Image: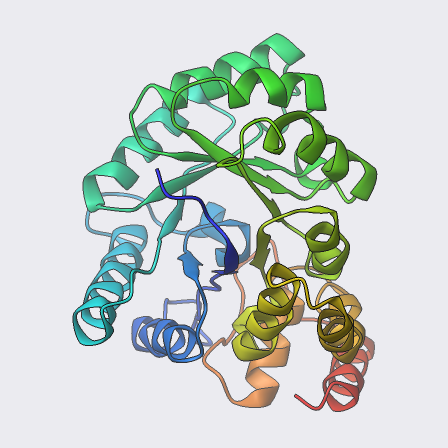
Length: 304
């Protein structure tokens, strides 16, 4: 399998005021991403509000997948560039996660993003067996570690075992602990160079790249993809003077993009800029007036 390196956008799902999906807006956003040089696309992740989307055959999720695959194909045919699609496939029910990975494989996605089972808080062995099950589908898997949302961290010793399974291509590391990210690089990536270590936190992309990581699955790139691309590309080239410059140029937004939740905050920023985003579905609600001011101020400071 090809190694993942670069900027991968965790796509939002734009919605109209009545909560219905704005498919044309979604298509515009996908084209915006491709035109601004992102490495790959991540539909149906947390930022997409996937838990609230209809997943019956032919419904909302299938339509969004179809749009992404159509636009990626058209882009490849017109430019010759391959754009990896990492399709969200997480569940706290292992049987469902396997089915989501099977769907990802069937539609032609390049990878599946599989989050740690949430809420049920499995043991170390339970975490391992969950990823063992999804790895058997035969599609490259990106492990998604985000303790803040799942309630369970994947310790490095467990990830070492998972990385030895077939079809485990890398990790989206959103533990928020740069020391853990460095442990992953030292204990897995340095021994298995094709194992991708991607930041799941825009603000930690710089230190992760400096430590030897491979890029980011980004929320902020929904708003300013070219800015995130130049930050990551500079780091991957070893030009950390430029990488730091780009990082600090976006630092206010790294805080503001989560000031009142995700994707509520990034959707407000996109609406403010005139990009298709719209509303959110319950249980999420619109950001507060205070958060709006924080986001607007950060966008102004970052010249977005």
